[in-house]
Structure formats: structure tokens, C-alpha cells
Image (cartoon, rainbow, N blue to C red; front, side):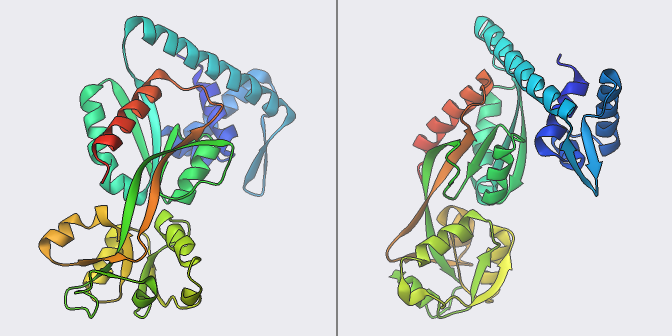
Length: 300
């Protein structure tokens, strides 16, 4: 319903990238460039300066972006107003989630939500926690779900559940019969960790900061980009690691991994993150309410 050229311009202006805008809008980059050029022809002026593979808004572009923000806010308010009269819950949302949450929490939650609201379209973007927060900051997604502390005070952060992390070792490992252990004991073995920027990596670093005896003791055997890769490396006997207990239920049943509690326990929040000032569509309010109820029913 809104001018497609303006929608495309608005996305490029927020992300300052034609490539990222194309990914967000599920369009080709030439199609994004064409829409922006059409809008520039309409105003008979350039809206972006393009230099050395970087873009920035011109003075005219800044003006158009300001009006576009207001237009889309009003459009969202209109959508909400009409939906409230008709009682219909529909529309589209773009959600971002860190890897652990996207793989182990969201499939069931979003499946149940789609069953209740089949007219809602949800686009899911997966990145590490740092990347998801960045997407929320740039308005590239409507809602983020992350597994680490969010320091940006301009974002609204709501803890939805607590996640329990444990040490993991292969069967037959010297630590496999331990009920619990100090992290320093785990660090006596090659450690397999997630990449920089991941929520798991961040919470482990914060936890280790509490214990002076652990400083400099971390023997990083390898850094891997997903929970599945970490689990596979531990199963293969390449080292030990710390992961969310929620991610290893299958391996515990099959006996391919052994979980050992940490002393003191290591927990972290799973949190919803969104813009404080951004007007929220009714469909997003419904999703948040649904997710809150889901987290209360599935606290573990």
C-alpha cells in the first residue's frame, strides 16, 4: 500500500547499504538500485552520495528519510486502528535471533504462533547476539531475541527466561563422572568455544572474570560458529566446552555427551530486544504476549 520506492529508500537509508537492504527486502541488488533511482528521478536530485563503495545521505536524502519515518509511523498506526476494529491479526514481522535461540527455542514457539495466527508472515534472521543487537539498533528487524547482556540503554530489553549452562565432555573423559566442578578444573583441558560476538562466548568471559585463578588459564583449542559444531568437536574428543543445557538433550539421551554442572552455577538471560520509541504493530504486541506466555510455560 505504501509507495514501494519510498519503502526501498527507507531501508537503504537505515542500513546505509544497498546489499543489506536487498537481503532485508528479499530483492536483488539491481532491483533495489532501480527503485532508489526512480525516487531520485521523481525529486530530480540525488538522495545518496556514493564514494569508495560507501554511501551516505545527501541533505535531500536526510529530508526524505525524516518524512519517510513519519509516513511509516502513521501507516503503522492506521494498520493497528483498522485491525482493532476488525479483530484481525495479520501482517509481517522480521525477527532476529542468536544461533542457540533460533535453533532450540524459536522453532516450537513460532510454529505454535503460526498455528494460532496463520495470516501472519514471519521472517527470521539468524546471527550471533552482537549481530542481532546491531540489526535492532539499525531498525533492520522489528524484534531481537538474544542470549547475552544488552548494554545499549536506548533499546528496550525484557528478560523472557533464564538459561542454564553446563560443562560438556565425551563419555570416558576423566571429568565425565563428576557431578559438578569448578571452571578452573575444566580449563585444565583444551577448550572449544564459540566465536567472538556470540552470547555464549560473552557470558563465559563475564563468568571467568569473577575468578582470578582462571585468568590466562583458558587453552582455546578452537573457535566454532554454532552449537552443533561445538558439540560435534567435543563428541570427537577434541576438547571440552560449556553450552546451554537446552542444546544437548538429544546427546544426553543418546549418551554421546556427558553434562557436568558448574560450581558456582552459570546462567544467562534470554531477552527480547526492540526499539523503545518505535511504534509497534498490533501483530508484534500479539507475538510478544504469546512469547511471554510460552516462556512461562517452558521455563527450562
